Image 1 (spheres, helix red, strand yellow):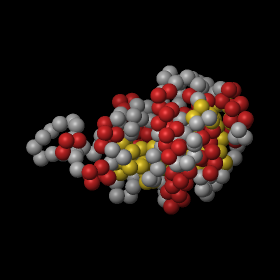
Image 2 (cartoon, rainbow, N blue to C red):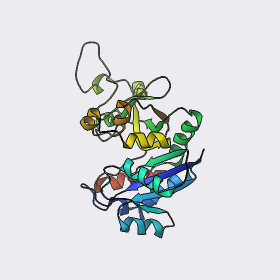
Image 3 (cartoon, helix red, strand yellow):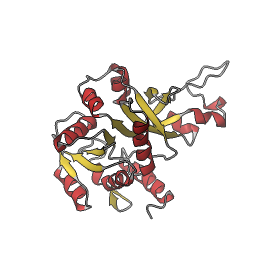
Length: 261
């Protein structure tokens, strides 16, 4: 299976302008993500899809490949599709890897690719990891996913799902009666997707789904349209950087893995 990894990257971000070029342990954020994708087993080519020459120049500066895309594209997925189409080459699998997860582990990327190889009928795949602490379940920036017996997503939410019921108490916060072993029933979604080319084209032609608009989660558009999403399990957490305050946590995780000082 021939696989292309595309990292959509925009300079303008309302909460963190210039985020892709922000230094994480001395390197631009986009470089950390690019190098992780490049090291992943099963990935044949990696490129950054951007609408800003500053990002393109930085990528080329560290030896990466960048493709310019239309600034008017509505989403990162549309940017991925445009970049893949511009290459004029045939790929069996196209990865959409968020450019703001500098601690993304190469083995996570490889696990998603392996799932697409193992299930040839699967149109889309993504990844999830365990939660380390019950408090994380109530962070709306940590997206939760529940899966069926075939490891295909049933739903994604910013709310803690599944709900852990107590026999006599109905409260939104179930931490008071949660047992440590029950944390293993929860999965944290990670920002990586694999698409068959036809599934990527179909997705970009779909209108936004009401559930997507409620949760602000693009993957619900696929589920709403009946497109199956396989979920590869990984032990490796990957922290998204949404605001400048998130940089220190990402650096700490990279230091924990021996990748940064």
